[in-house]
Image 1 (cartoon, rainbow, N blue to C red):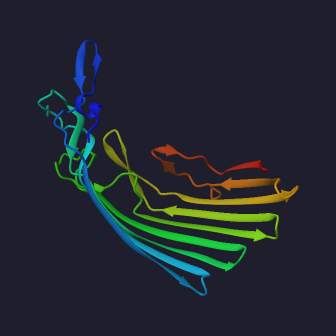
Image 2 (cartoon, one colour):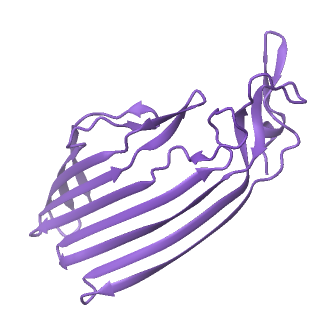
Length: 231
């Protein structure tokens, strides 16, 4: 259901009442479903999984900037409005491999075909299906961990994503997806059966890639270390 602000919201500035809400808004509606499988191989050392997903947003409440020259019955040039949503469907496949008790390798690939039936970008057209903002069509991730004896653990993670769109001031801008590589290492010392201390070091963005999240530039290569007590 639409909120009170989405129906009646606005603000007062310099003695003028500006409306954002629309009391005619209808509830949002959506249909979704998914199906998948898990299969173990090689005496359960390997598990492969696959999932197909589908979502259709039949009606959504969004915030729109109306086309130039258009004024609705409430005197608004922009505000909350009902609109056709979008459609998202795709597949995700993954593999979880344990060649040894102390070794784990997990990898996943996700393909997402997500389109907005009513784009939030101003294109001059009432119907302009575009890639949904903030959604990466292709994404791959790998996480590997290795234990060395009872005290040392090592890890590596990698995320790679395709280019994606992000809205800024009503226009669509294309950004490169992440290519993030990280490493971590830890050493655990046991004082007794209940008390342990772990020293750890984490290096992020080891490839020193310059990429953006939500329109903001992310930090270059950086590291963090610390001590963790458990008792």
